[in-house]
Image (cartoon, rainbow, N blue to C red; front, side, top):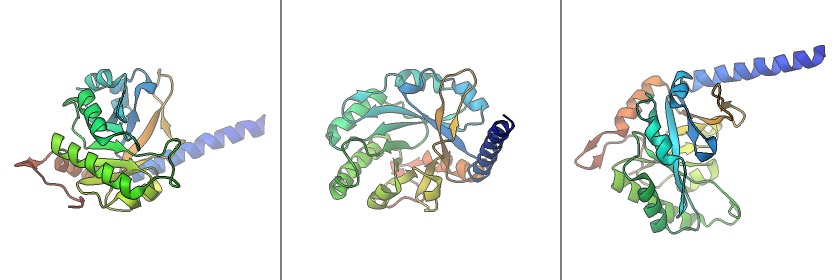
Length: 240
C-alpha cells in the first residue's frame, strides 16, 4: 500500500510540475469545445484563468454542431475571447462547406481568427491524400472566409500537412503539438493529450490549447486580428 500511495503521489507531483512548466512556456491558454462537451460554464472557464475558447460550428458539407448557437450566445459577456472553427471534409464540395458554415454561423464569428480544422479521419491518411488537390481546395475555402468575414484564417493541422499547406495566403497555423511551435507562422498549439482541463462540478474535460507566445504578444495579436483598413487586412506573419 505504501508503494502504491507513493507512486500515486509522485504521479500527481509530476503532473503538477509539468503543468507549471507549460504555464510558464504558454501563459495564454484556452480550450476547444463541441457538442460532446455538453453544457459549458464559460464563467467557470474564465475563473480557471482560461483566456479564450474556440467553439465548433460545422463539419464538412452538412453537419452543424447542435450546441453552437447556445454555446456562442452564452459565451458572450464571459470575458473570454471567442472564436469558431469548422472541421474540413476532404471529399465534400468546397461550395457546400462554405454554405454550411455561413448558414450555421451567420455573423457570429467572435473576435478571433476563424479556424479550419484539417485532421485525418477514416479512410483518409497521409498515404492516400492528394496534397496538391487538397491544397487547392483548402486555399479556396480560406480565401472565401477571409473575404466573407474580413478575418484572418488559422489552419489547425499536424506537422506533415503544415509543410504541405504553409504557403497558402492569408493564413497562419495551429499545430497538434507544442514540439512543433518554433515556426513564426504557428500561432496556436494543442497541449499534451493527457493535459485536459476539468471544471469543478462538470462531467468530462476540455481539450487544452494555447497561444504560441506570452501575454504581451497575445495583446498585440488581438489588436492585429481586428485591424481592418479599407477592406485590407493588416496582419503580421502572413504569407502574401
